[in-house]
Image 1 (tube, one colour):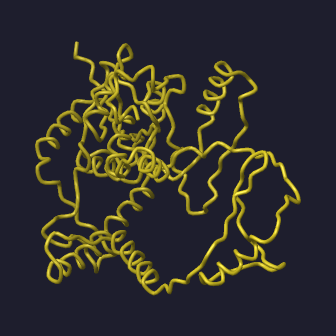
Image 2 (image 1 turned 180 degrees about the vertical axis):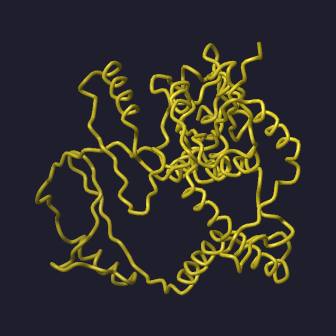
Image 3 (image 1 turned 120 degrees about the vertical axis):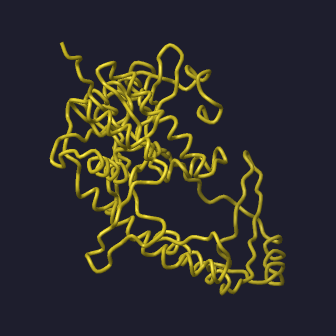
Length: 370
């Protein structure tokens, strides 16, 4: 009797392969492509300008053995699932893998999941789809633009400034914005201004700022005027005319997008953007938790959306109700206000709402815990 063939699952990173392999069991073989397997050549432009900007892809140097391993595994598998990351870059990697492995372009071999949990991975395996060529086209457009800009400008920077500098579709535009802003700052003519503050003591001390003088809005532009007004004010008496009491509601902050996660980590933890993304990637791909195995702790970390899935909302509400009581269950709804938001993935959130950081602190590094 011939041995049962395994299903092959190809992911991007080895740590992700390890986590997913534990979820799927022995029927599945999980291999990592370790990022891209094909790219534009480094020695030339690699784009046919006269043929609709057609890119010329080659296998990445140093990945020959890995490609052989993937082809061998694909030949011995009865089903192949392409489980690269759920974004444009991941979609393109799946498309390149299809080409290298000779897979049917129309076959439903692509699986995606927003979080690395057993439930999410199992659901994805049951619902494969074809590779999304629109996402692939979007990634290729970005890659071609990077090459067209970078390949033209970078050598100029090497000649005029120093070797090793690089330019690209984002860097070049961002540098222009920074230069324009710097020119505005340098062109700014500073104006002198003075504020007059007074501390009043009655039941509770409070500070007041002089806003009007002789019934008109005041702007003090020199010290002489400030001293003159101050000496006149000292001659008078002061009284509180009215006290307004207001109640303010402070709403919850919206869920994390990639940029708001980076900003918060910088402000509160002093993390660089690179460090934030490295640690977030570790939490997404899976951490070895004592008694639970390898667990993906957060949802996909590259997103511009504040949307939360219905399942995640239900889990959060159930947890809050059982832990703190029904009175604490809010009805906040966050929506994406900007028109250009892609909303391809939900916001960054914990994969397991009931898995508190303090419970698993011993299994995490200091930075992961923070």
